[in-house]
Image (cartoon, rainbow, N blue to C red; front, side, top):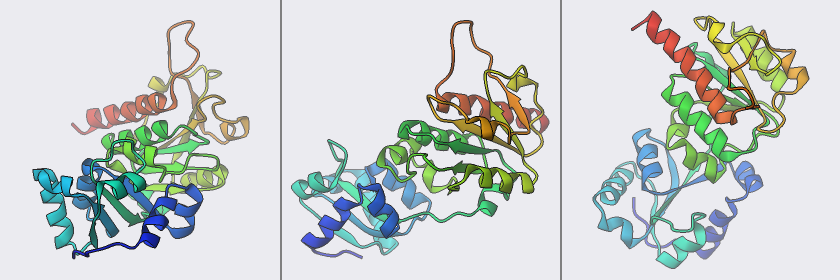
Amino acid sequence: MSNTEITRERIKEIKRLHESRERAEKGLLLIEGIRLMEEAVKEKVSFEEVLYTQRIEDTDRGIAVLAALRKGRAPLYPVSEKVMQSVAETESPQGILGVLRHLVWDIKDVTKGRGTVVVACGLQDPGNLGTIIRTADAGGCGGVVTTQNTVDIYNSKVIRATMGSIFRTPVLKFEDPKEAISALKKDGYQIIATTARSKTSYLDIDYMKPTAFLIGQEAAGIPDDLLESADIKVFIPMKVGVESLNAAVSASILIYEVFRQKLRQHP
């Protein structure tokens, strides 16, 4: 479905979606760029509206995406480059932007396949969270759980860092991390936390049991009260003199050890 004109008032409303509070209040998010649009279309995401410039119709990928959107009856609005520049958050927008509803998941979506779960406890860096979601997707995880003080999953930098994984990987928010841990334990998950104070290497754990990893804030790590909630505490071996790893790197190492063990069990 193609529309001829979008109102100035609606343009202003879309601009306000760059603010976390506005996204939460309206239940909407923005995605920009041809790659994310392709991934969203592939996953059959429902769009509120799509803005695009003439430039996007000059490429084969752009033509294909617009055709798929029309087939899915997404409201399409051609806009000028000036309008796109004013609405987009990226410095050099590619000429296409989508508005869509928040993706709705619950704990059953995260645990139904008994896959690994990553619990992000207070992560502030959007690139880290986005990379964790992308790695969780690649590593066959059940999903990602975020808790209070973690960056908004619909932050544009988080979404871009997921490279489209946000559309197929369940991501669920719990305000209280202990509530998230309790829900996972109730569902039979072993809770594993990383800490330099542990004497057990992550390599010495059997991950055939459903597993959830606690990943702490980039600087402060996992709070002591959450560490006490873990069933097992492990450390990631590092060269002497190196204190810690980036949160996304730590999560990736853990995710892929589970993936490796499962591949060995079921080649």
